[in-house]
Length: 505
Image (cartoon, rainbow, N blue to C red):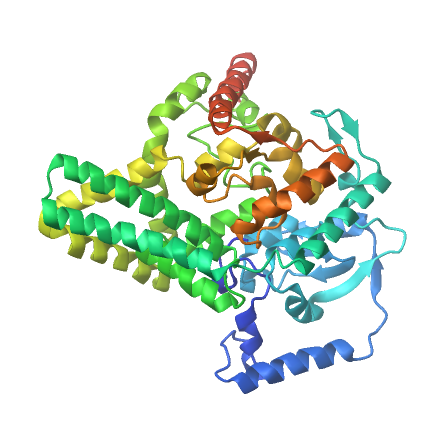
């Protein structure tokens, strides 16, 4: 989930470190210093949960859906209604995530995004204001029936409920099978790979000099290192390696800041919005590529009607090939820096500075200051060509023909993840090349699952999809890349039609 204020929880409504709060510190958010404080806080929370409970107010979905404004936010988790308005600014996952779910059911995303939901529920109690009326369905009414044009099927309320129950049962089965437990040796080898590549690049330039051929070769090694670092920080950002959140957060900052020069909190801010509202325009920043590109059925028409034309979007599929390699060094790095400075994330700034200090100490004796900056730019340019950045992978694995049907956000989470994403075929190379993000369906259904287990659960997910007639799409790598250009061309045509047929506003 995204991070704006108090983002230490990496997407959690309340993360593990907050159990260190004792009663007098809960108001100002400062952590307690001792294990005793942690124990007393836990005991106090459990004691509160065991107190006799007053009868709860009951609400209809019509009442709940009215509370979806920035200054008035209610949401539903397991049929319980919570007023999170006052908590939004202190939410470790950022206020934007709560805003996206105001007036809606957040049960599935709550379970998917939190490392230990049972602990988090203890701190939900002060926000509890009621529960759904007995006659109300589990989800808001506009999500209980959805028409999907791809498989041409109509989902009834009962069938949708069975689908959700079966997916929840699948998750419980996977937990029993320890599919959410990480193999620390796998991730240790992954980190070792990154460090060896970094060290090897320096040894080569130190021994052989800084000629053009050597520079090109070491830039390739550093590109691979940076790309693999992107995948490792992704695992840590999702708290999928260590059982303790604080270790995931610390290593996330080290890899994202020291090894990549980017802000961990900036990544969280963007990426967890993507997970809680996957492929929903404009809530998912990974598919809101404007003004560079227009995607989906809504954005091109919106831009066309408003006569928005930064360039001729009808040719965006051609421009993508030319412009996309510059996005990381020219767009994402400045965006990360601006995010850190604007929100005063001093710790992230310090980590990012350590990246540049390391690079200058390592390579400036051979290339000078300007040459080292060029090397950094070249490495990040190559990384985009390597198709290893989040937007490129999202575009590869986004099923555009189905995602367009989901932009209104009227589809339940489980169904949405399957319908609007696809996998890239499983192989040793594809898994390494994409950091196992070729298993997009499994990753979005179970974000905290260690990626080395995704291929193990894929057959179970596929079987369940077959049971309910949900298409489980698995593409070859080259076809997935080709689909990007075909989709960009299609949406450019939609923009052109809207631009030419609507009078200027």
